[in-house]
Image (cartoon, rainbow, N blue to C red):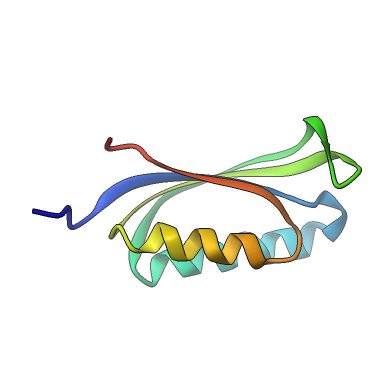
Length: 98
């Protein structure tokens, strides 16, 4: 039998050049997307940090960790939206239950 809900973590890195208001709006956008089909447990903003290696000629990024519970179909949609959103440098979604 398939799981109804599972626990997930997503870490994404935003371009810090967007500005504080745009970063806050983007974090709220992703949180609202998850809340349409799941429950956000925590949003932990790590802030601006130095990257391990340059991405698109940038040496810093704004890190955000979000934990949530959702149906298995939601992470695929969230991943799709993260990949096509301007300003998202990298993202990774992990299922914590497996």
